Amino acid sequence: MLRRVDRIRYDEAAADLRRHHETIGERDLEEAKFRLAHLTRYFSGHRIAGIGPADVTAYAQRRQQQGAANGTINRELACSAACCASPTRRTADPAAGHSEVEGGRRPSGLL
Image (tube, rainbow, N blue to C red; front, side, top):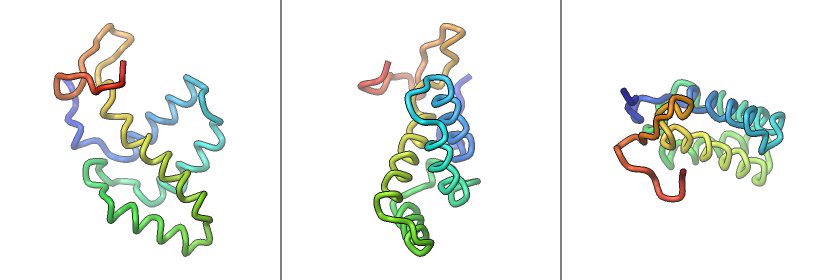
């Protein structure tokens, strides 16, 4: 049974993205961990479906108050976008040969 996407929490998605980076090796893992650390401190416990533009703006404001450069904040938010998108990709176990996607249809551009 597929899990409802609206129940997935940020922490689960961040852990999934970390596993992805560890497995694929397409990104510097230390950089990804650094970027996710700030995001996790802020968004931990939030449901992904509940994170909206106002939350992202509040995060950016907080990071600016902490002295982070706008470029750093933008890279963190790009990482956040990847993190929040990952649970909506494949929801079945590809190792088991399942190819179902949440909602019964495959998002465009994804295998």
